[in-house]
Structure formats: C-alpha cells, structure tokens
Image (tube, rainbow, N blue to C red; front, side, top):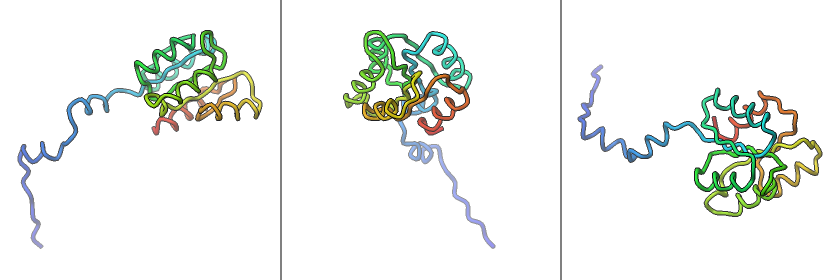
Length: 150
C-alpha cells in the first residue's frame, strides 16, 4: 500500500487561515457578562463565581449605567436584577432588545419573586431566562454556560 503525502508550504497555510488577526484575538477573549442591579452582596457573589469560571465581568447597580455598558461593551450576557434605580429590570430588558445593536444579547432576570406571572412577564420583555432568589450558584453557572454555548 502506497501512502501519499502532501507538503504544505507557508503560503498554503496562510491561504487556509482566512480569519483576520482581529477575529483571532476576539476569539481568545473570555466572554463578558454584565451584572446589573440586584443587591451588592448578590452582585459580588455572582461576579466572583463568574470570574472564577473564567468570565470577564462588568458590574453596576443602576439601570442607566447598565444600558451604557451594554451598548459600549456589548457583553455576551446580562444578569439583571428586577429592581434598579434609573431603569428597572423589565424596562432595561425591553430597551436592550428593542435596539438592533443589542437585541441579540441574552438576559437572565433575577428576582425575589417566584411567581409564574413574573416569569411570563420577563419573557414578554425579552428575557431568555429567569432565576428566583435565593440563587443556587451551581444552577446560575449552568444557565450562564447554556446561554453562552459553553
């Protein structure tokens, strides 16, 4: 049996790699998660957990700052508390998904209420998921990974 081999030259390898260099560097960056609202302790716990899992984390307490970060940083996911000064969680989610620039950013709403009507309302304004408090850290990480495709 004869085995055929093909020699690749450097120029052949360059042709096979069609991604521009900027795309390579972006692919190596960890996914960014924006955490907005919720209590300071909750934000800190979530942020620490996600950083330990390898995510880049942005944190803010109010809705308007969160919207500025979402537009400026284009995170891959937003974890959002329902009650925020400036713009509440439902309003934020609605505005985020109303803009073509940010419409595809998935949102997980976090709330102290665990009623089916609250979960339905979250989905109406565009949230992909809803987590009631108190948060189970393992469940939170599983949902983040599912929405980010990891």
